[in-house]
Amino acid sequence: RQNLALLCGCILVGIVIPITIFHCSLNAAFLIALCMIVGIFQVFGSFWMLGINFNGFSLVPLVLSIAIVVQHSIFVIHSFIGLVNDRKKRAKKTLSETFPAVFSSVFSLFILIVPLAFTSIPFIRNYICFVFLSVSFTAFNIPLLLLPCILSLMGPRNFDSGCEDGDESESEMEPTFMPAPLATNDFKQQNNYTRLTLRSQDTQMEELANRQ
Image (cartoon, rainbow, N blue to C red; front, side, top):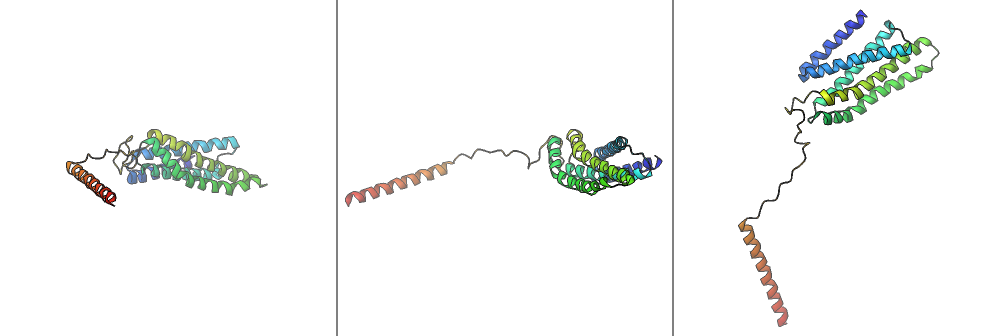
């Protein structure tokens, strides 16, 4: 337990400092720390459901799950901060952009671990297969299900554009159509002169046709 508390403290420090420096957002650091805490409780819950004792063998996958959750959460929040719009639209756009990468990462881990479930060695099946399956489940649902919902409600704003939440960027705004300018007097005079010229040419052609 002391080692777990020390590791969690180191991870919190590693979260707060880079996020605060690169994104200037304590809100983003708080959300990532929240995802880490939820991931810890979720993995402990899966240990309890699977009947796995918390010891040195289960501590390593727990730390790995925390690292994967934090990594994917930083990836999602970095994409969210780079967008400019209201929170709900930014969350939808972030989910559509980050879902393929995060899902591919988790699915590859899942495919590698599933064959170990059919082994005859109980230690490998309990402390490697089941534990890493819970790790892959935690690494999927927190960054892709929980975090986008939280970002749509209390996500950090974009600092590069300076646009407040709820404002729309110029690229996202609907185009407005301005009416065409009214014709000037010179244009009207030129148009009338053209019409008169065409009429005079038509009358000349009719007179030539009548003479023939």
